[in-house]
Length: 132
Image 1: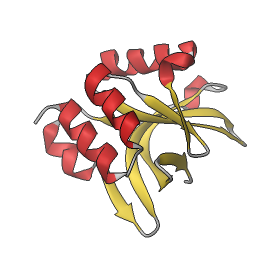
Image 2: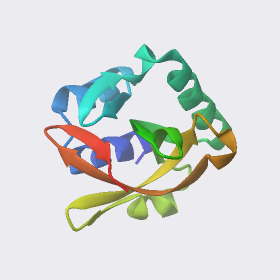
Image 3: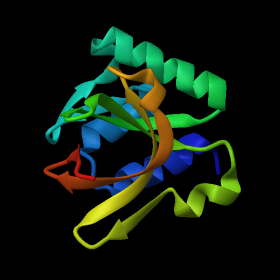
């Protein structure tokens, strides 16, 4: 299984809107979500460039992104499939009424606070929202 195939499997697990999954499968288009609403990441050039940097530097595959304004800064959370297949079974799992997903969180306002880790996301109506 390739990282892209794993990403598609996760998108289905998260119940993402089928046209967004198709755009990813057919054209490598990644969707970003603001409060469950989806948009193509290339519509936000700075966030798109950051996504490409993360993929190149870490050999991972970004399959979805959330965008939030928090008390600690503007954050873009890049949900990823790592370069290590032995980690893939633990990238996303259900935890109550949300999912825990492995991501790189870019704090645009404070780059030093950017990091890899697990975040909580909720799926609704084909979209995503970061909740923890």
